[in-house]
Amino acid sequence: MPMTLLRLFTGSDIMNLSENASQVCEYIEKIGIEYDIVTHEPVFSLEECQRINGLINGVICKNLLLKTDSGKIFYLFMIKDNKRFVTKDVSKKLGCSRLSFASEKYMEDMLNTCAGSLSVTSLIFDKEKNVSLAIDSDVLKEEFICCHPSDNTATLKIKTEEILNVFLPSLGIEPKIIEV
Image (cartoon, rainbow, N blue to C red; front, top):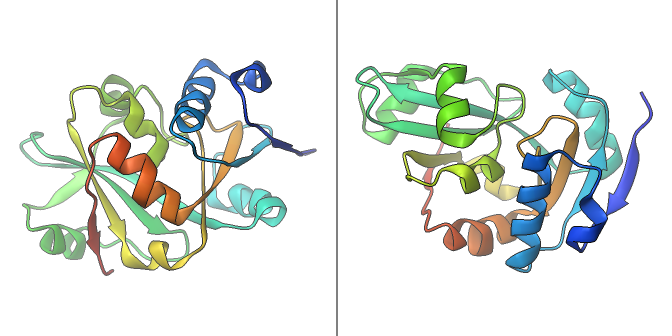
């Protein structure tokens, strides 16, 4: 699968991206974040994401949309791709009842995205602030985070400190950092 590395700085450069990806790129540019982007065929597995990571070199995360049984509390949980997710442990560390995977319908309704495209950037679409963010502390040890711009045909590389200190505050989001 051929992949092309592009560096994007202005909205005029992102005309060939999907609407979601364009909105994400425009937003992060507006708040002053520089990034690299790789466009590629749709990827559906962490193995495919690892091939892309060979081009841009940053941490790849599993991005999981979780919910409580009542469906009143939602978390987007970021964990390094090589770590095991244990529902019971994460629920306990977040101080909530047992979490389970939220259906794709919730992703579509709350974050305007689908399975395989979910990432921290999807939070720009959470206008009602229904989703909290939880991050495994090991993710924050990496210099760069690689994530989809709510579209699995592109991958962004953004400095971790910019995600924490610029992107999330611009959305009014304070992540819960936990050790898994």
